[in-house]
Length: 113
Image (tube, rainbow, N blue to C red; front, side, top):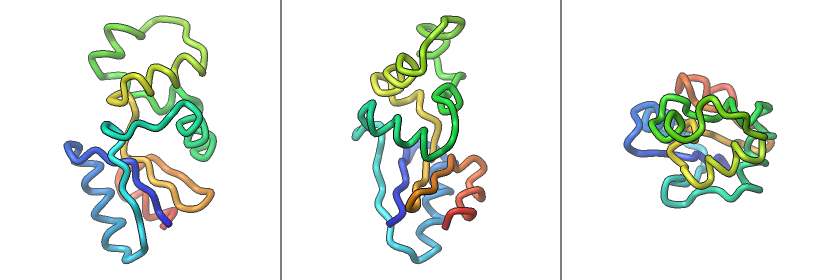
């Protein structure tokens, strides 16, 4: 089953969801702002993505700029920041089996469908 971590207020996330819907494959939507992944879940997602935690941070968010920018943060601290402030999580994240991708651009999602 395909899973998308989705924010309906984000155009790129909506475009990514539309691509998944068009594929006809079964999927589930996790609205991560309301159902924020735990530190363990987010760590697993980052591992599947094959990136560093900092690579999943939306660095232009006001909360990042005011509270975290310019600070030396461990990977664990970055993950905790995203869990406590889910707006910081880049989106959409799509997982299909043992593959995951950040859907930016949304067409990148096609690579794992």
